[in-house]
Image 1 (cartoon, one colour):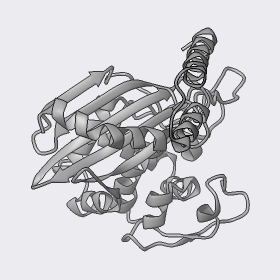
Image 2: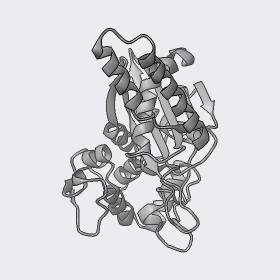
Image 3: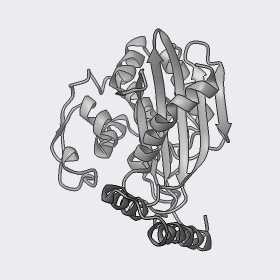
Length: 294
């Protein structure tokens, strides 16, 4: 929506409000107060839906596809599911509680207090701790990391990082060289859940068990959010165009489906675009299940 359109919407609201007060007044002052609050509420966050995909987890059959699910963008923190597979298969991750790693000065800490301190694999996935991912990729080394991502067939499998910066081990999956589409996310999840990735079954089970869970409309969701911002040519971030992912699966009454949602902000908003995409998915879930025939 353009700025002019926003202004038009505001004028329309003002007109409605003035008619309420100049015409028939609400008999109940609580109603009047509620109307005032209605017009003071902030506008909902606006984002373009890039892809919504629901597929049967066992067969991979697509039940619902909306948008452009072949568009590749950064996986951001959804890559932690793949990195959990790789890290466990390489012997770097033992179980949900080990190894515990300590934050050190100089490590990213913009995620808040949960990033500053002792972090287990469970904490890493739940709180989306970037520096824990970086410790794993550095322990793998550039060659082994690249080979492992390529073996999984994960997106474009390019973990070289920003051209000329040699930062593939630090951020190739965050608005950098590694990209993936919604369809490819679903394919990776299908192979994870059906134990057909080229790693040990124990490593796939480990990654599946780390995925964060939520209850939504009678369904149990497991998955990972991801949010990142595009870089401009001057290497600054465009905070008005954040990408927001949810990649996971949902279960109810023995039925399991893969669920992938990708959206891109149309203006700047506080908070994580990944969390907003997840929350919108959960809010829309009753309608999505109806359209998917679930």
